[in-house]
Image (cartoon, helix red, strand yellow):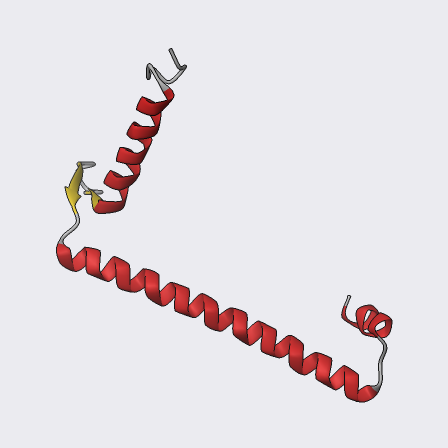
Length: 94
């Protein structure tokens, strides 16, 4: 028996997957005044918003990475115009 109380690795994996699915599709609401905690399924609108937010985050990450790469390319172009060697560029940038 596994230390977690599951009889097999497959049971543990299934429970973990179920937990992830449940976590990903449920909302936990806490009433701070009363301390009451409730769990509910996300509405279709909430699920759609979550998907839209995830897509927007990926787009923003790609834009940020492109911006960083463009800055490096622009910097390297300036160094190249100055005739600096790779060793000199590394010494300047590090």
